[in-house]
Image (cartoon, rainbow, N blue to C red):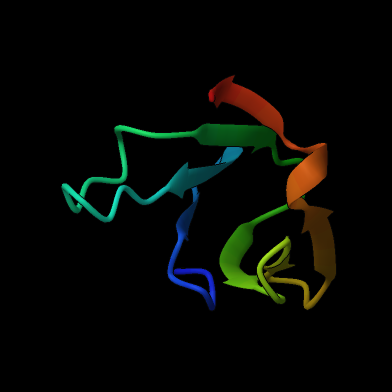
Length: 77
């Protein structure tokens, strides 16, 4: 999902939530900041932004998990 301000892209995998900062000059999401956090939600299948600073993950069981951007590990500033 893309953040409401268009500055970040969130990608959910089986084991990790990734957030990539968008580089508007090049159009790349791999040139700037990258954040990640492990996911421990059984069968997590959806991610959506809740504002520009937090994300919500949903799993198959109908549970919702909120993750603040500030709590994520910075991989590359």
